[in-house]
Length: 257
Ligand code: CO8
Image 1 (cartoon, rainbow, N blue to C red):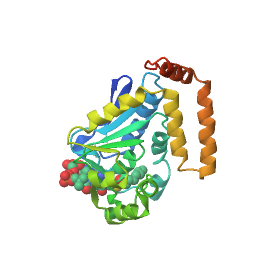
Image 2 (image 1 turned 60 degrees about the horizontal axis):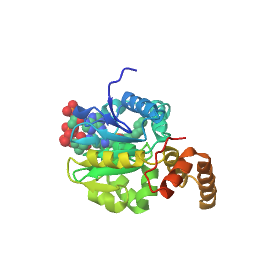
Image 3 (image 1 turned 135 degrees about the horizontal axis):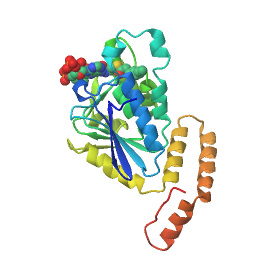
Image 4 (image 1 turned 120 degrees about the vertical axis):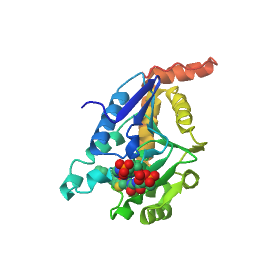
């Protein structure tokens, strides 16, 4: 597929994937999501990249939702089959993803931000699930991830009113990690990405896997899962290097092995 909607900027050991459809407030059409999944998978397989930043082009939007024009005449079967496969590919990315949100993150845009592992927002960012105003409801995980993240009551308010919420609201609700002044969200996300990328890549991958598992399992099962991943890390060179570096009072040099 020729690259059209997603720009990738590499600044090893991090990379930034930019949703590049600013004239439509980065509305997510099917081809765009397919391209995003493909680009993220390439970065996921790239040993030179330790953390991925995901952002939207322009200063108005991360993404203002799924493309309403494209969906308006869609059949039930079109929506039920195929349309979620590429979202699922994004869910399965192993490397940490930081969403840098500078403007609207609405509907599918908010759901995409919730496919990331950390969300950094500009004070101008606006979050919401406006689907109900279109006579539909969230379909790419919004009801579930919001209920897990902000709790039943805020999730109900967001999805039932369709209102927009400020970055400060979402910080208080636990959806956003950090709010920064207008225009600084990308730099702040990159700064955190560089920090994460400087840590052991295998440990980062397993940490992400273990935390996401907390949403899938009862506590005892999750604790067993964590213990296994924890023990597995003792078979890596990175663990030996990390602990040796601590004792030798120097910075560890991780190799992802
Ligand atoms: N889809 C398509 N086009 C859009 C979208 C969108 N979601 N959002 C904005 N645009 C377009 C506008 O049509 C407009 O295009 P044009 O200039 O050609 O007319 C351009 O972007 C600029 O937008 P506005 O002129 O509307 O800008 P405003 O500043 O007046 O308003 C808003 C900004 C408030 C963000 C407004 O654009 C808006 O309400 N957008 C729609 C928000 C929304 O309802 N999002 C939810 C969509 S439904 C959804 O996401 C379901 C997810 C299901 C996922 C599963 C899929 C398989």
